[in-house]
Image 1 (cartoon, helix red, strand yellow):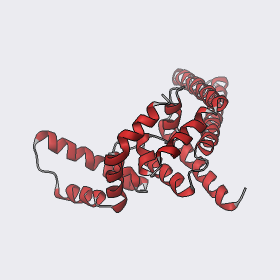
Image 2 (tube, rainbow, N blue to C red):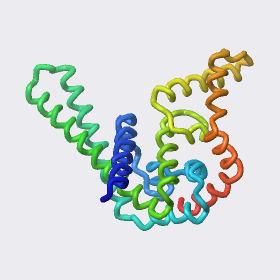
Image 3 (tube, rainbow, N blue to C red):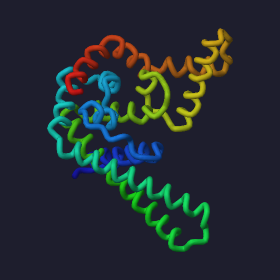
Length: 229
């Protein structure tokens, strides 16, 4: 495995692991091609922002369709996370009423280790599925899908996810958007600092280009994805 591919793979692992940590528990196991794709950060929106052609989008989904065993394995791994998380919850509740019970404490610590390992196994399958899905679309487009995925956990409009941002930046933008929405509903003036922040965010070239592409191509991309529901 060459150095560039290694860096990409490490990036994928960190990204998926972070998503699992923030989620706190396994996502509900999905069986459809598009549901698995969405779990990997591959959506009509991210495909358009990454400038995938119709042919490339179909190829990505076809690759996932052909990875049936891995998709089934992902479901199994998600179920293992759910079971491990339930065990952690059970033992933690027992400790609330019997905190000095060494046996229960040991079971609790073991359950946490099992949960951590289960989450890592989910990430491993996600990374493998992602690498299979994006074969042949080019490193630049793969990177843009990952940029979109990194912003997917925040409640923001799709074009805003076209730019790589830090967690701190997202934690500033997300509440600013909520404040804007609230001001619009109430017919109030938006705080000037918030208005300036959002104006700057929306003026980013990546965001402007993403909005243009989404307006032009999103409906067609949704039709392509719908063929794999």
